[in-house]
Image (cartoon, rainbow, N blue to C red; front, top):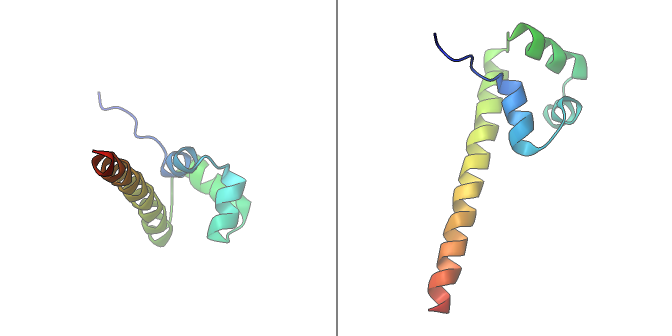
Length: 77
């Protein structure tokens, strides 16, 4: 049996440490829309793309931070 995939909205909120209301404000959409997307798992394609880009951006920010730490360690040698 396949594992149930985490809802994209919940994943973005978790990754950014924000509530669904804060996400709605960030995306400039009504908070009821976010709630509907969570409950129905029916996210419009453009919103899905935006949410996936937010996740990719967070991933790249984390990688950049790792590189900065590595660079700083090398500079201390």
